Length: 71
Image: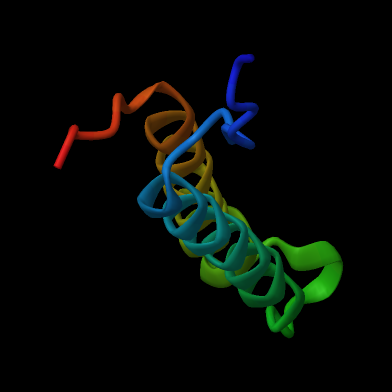
């Protein structure tokens, strides 16, 4: 019979990178919420927060598309 091995779609390093990406995205939103100017039109709300959030999404895409090494 076939030995049914529970194969996950990603390697453990991919999952760690995904969790890191989620943490970076949440940090970006948290940075945007710290902006003290009206309606978030300061440096944190318009520049730093969105850049950090986009970096988090890039990490997510990289974690999904990265092929794990066979070691």
